[in-house]
Amino acid sequence: MKYSIESIRAVDTDVASELDQIKSILLFTALTTIGAKVYIPHEPVPFTLQTLFVVLSGAFLGWRNGMISMLLYLLIGAAGIPIFAGAGAGLPILFGSTAGYLFGFVISALVVGVIIDYSPSLAWTVISMFAGFLIIFTCGTVYLNAAVFHNWQVSVTQGFLIFSYWDLVKLVSAVAIYRTLSPRFKQIQPEE
Picture (cartoon, helix red, strand yellow):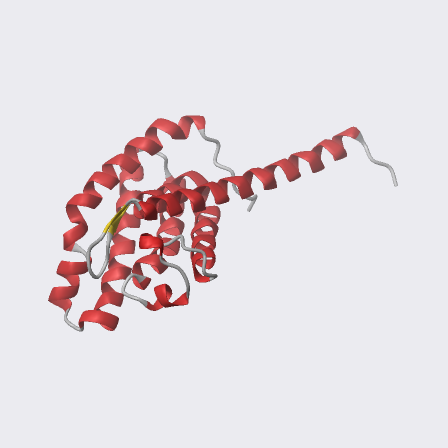
């Protein structure tokens, strides 16, 4: 079997690309973990920085790798490693009051990646990240109503509206971070 220099370079490039994807996925899993450690206790759902990194994962990594990064975050926490807010870990967290938000992370990263891939303009960046935050808080509020409050007014107030000012700041920050860093960041994702 003959190998040409070009075929060896192609294999090296593919391996490097896959390693870059893995490193980027792990980076955003780690950033989401750090965001969980910036924690202000509040019942039934604490204030954290996680959602900032969720929307940025979809923007920087693309829909597939952003989604994988958030799935990895959930799997690591479900395995018992204390990476959730308040040093939470294990399957009980994935069925507790924050479960809807956590599962919303996966959908949010996917949707942000799809929308931002449509156009990297400022308007589409804002739309994608607003949609990402809206998905997280809608999933969280619906779950809170079903599992905790059984009262839509209380669920919306405690699970959605209470975070609106805090997440408006995170939305503006996410857009600014993405717009500043995206020209220097090559989106690394698998070929379709």
